[in-house]
Amino acid sequence: MIQTTTVRPRLAPSPLLRGWLLVLLSICAGCSSGDSVERFEPVADLQELMLHVVEPAAQEYWGAVGWILDESGEHYIHPTTEEAWIAVENAAFMVAESGNLLMMSDRALDDGSWMAMSEALIDIGRRALEVAEAKDEQGVFDVGAEMYQVCSACHAAYSPEVLRPSDDRFVDPATGGA
Image (cartoon, rainbow, N blue to C red; front, side):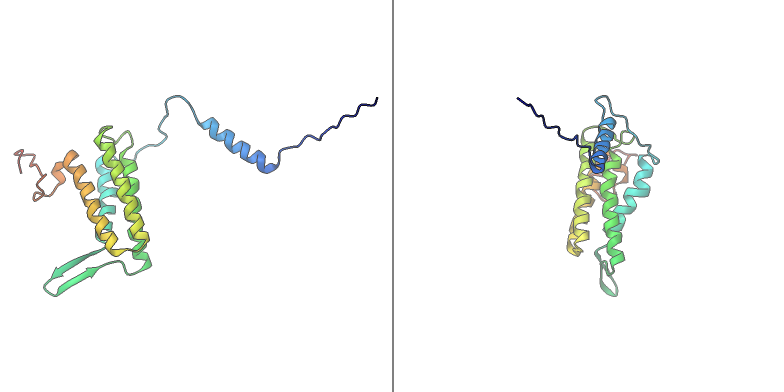
């Protein structure tokens, strides 16, 4: 009796498969089960971040749509060019990403309401971006009002001295009252 065996050629992985394997191995090598180490270095402290990033972005967004009433009448402000809409979108992106920056360990004031308010900033920033990308003028105005509430709620809890004196949440640091 003659016994035959079939020898199958060994398949070499394709270059594409090898590339994906390298990518997966690299990703797995970067994963660790130990404590994660933050790999970033903040440049601005909390106050500088608010002054140079968050506040200008919010002001840009808030100023994009609105009405001005003066002695010559009512003036409607809204983006009229593609560049102006891009500026509104950029401001929305900056507001949303600022929420992430506020959650960095060097800036986070606590793990409770600070994180929740930072997440609310991310959420409202995303909504702001959606209406800006849709070029929805009324949406920009309405979401801008909600953004103001998110910002004011955080300031009332963590920095009441920056609220306007007419805001009923304002506490005068000198007197302890309004």
